[in-house]
Image (cartoon, rainbow, N blue to C red):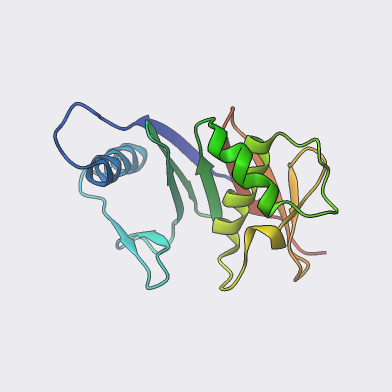
Length: 166
């Protein structure tokens, strides 16, 4: 599966709200990735992003305070998560970890892996604690038997794709 990933800055110099700055950054990154200055992102009723007029693309979007990440694939669903290191992540992660997961997984790595898989899975009612990670957070499993590969593209950045069922 081919996934295209781009990370770009959120411009803090303009007077817009944080949310507006994030949307602007995502639009700028997407347009650069597609080479289409008019590309727009829409959202499904469930809130999942899509590229308007491009049914051939699967897209996932994430943002931290200073960066946005956009992942695109033509081969199938993709999930991305970007997160800045913070004490909040270390406090929240124990609530989404499972007893059968290794306790030694770095909290930021675990959080971004689970968030990326959650976005890729697109399952109503799925919660992060339903997602089971292997010892390095590079493979994830759902209760329905689906398996996901997780690529960590740096600290606080993870991309997930579904692996073929056997």
